[in-house]
Length: 155
Length: 77
Image 1 (cartoon, chains in turn blue, cyan):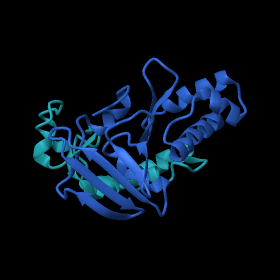
Image 2 (cartoon, rainbow over the protein chains, first blue to last red; image 1 turned 135 degrees about the vertical axis):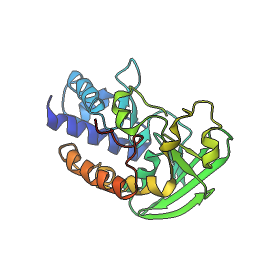
Image 3 (cartoon, rainbow over the protein chains, first blue to last red; image 1 turned 180 degrees about the horizontal axis):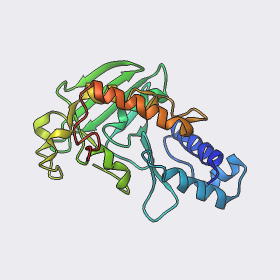
Image 4 (tube, chains in turn cyan, brown; image 1 turned 45 degrees about the vertical axis):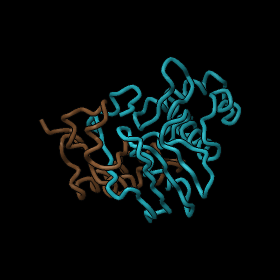
C-alpha cells in the first residue's frame, strides 16, 4: 500500500465532499492526483478499508460514505450558513461536521425514526446554538468497538 | 447510530435492539466525543499517520463522560 497516495486520496475525497456535497469518482481522483485510474481505484478501496467510517457502495468502487458525510441521501440533512447541500453519515457523525466549516453555522435537520418528529441541531464551532427538542438523544444499536467489523453500518 | 427526539422513542423504533439501552446518551455527550482531534483534524495532510494518537485523546474524553460501558469500549477479557 502506498500510504502517501492513500492519505492524499482520503483527503481529496473529504475535501471534495466539503466543497460539493458528494464524492468524486476514482477516474476524477486519478486526474487530480496524477495517477492511473487503476491506482486511484485501488487507493479509494484501501482508504475505505482503514476502518475510519468510510466505505464504498456495496459491489462498486464508488464512494458511498466518507465520515462525517454520506454521498447518497440520508435523513440527516445538513445546511451550512443557510445552504442545504450535504447529507450526514449518521446521527453521531453529524456532530463532527462543524469542524469542516470553521466559523460557519452548521444546521442538522432530521426526523425521529419512530415518530417522524423533526429534530434540529445548530452549531457554530464549539458552540451549540440549538437542540430541538432539548430531550434529543443519540443511540448506538451496535457496540461502537464493533463498528469496523460491520460492512456498511446503518444503525 | 441515530438521533431520537427522546429516550422513550428509541424503543418505539422497530429496528432497535431491545438490549441496547446502554447505548443511549444525551446529545451533549456525543457533541463532546466528536470534538476531539480525531474529528477536528480530518483534513490535515498527515491525518492517517496521527490517528492512533488522536484516538487516545478521544478515549480520554469518553472516560471523562462515563462512556466506558460495553456499548462504547471493548470489554476487558
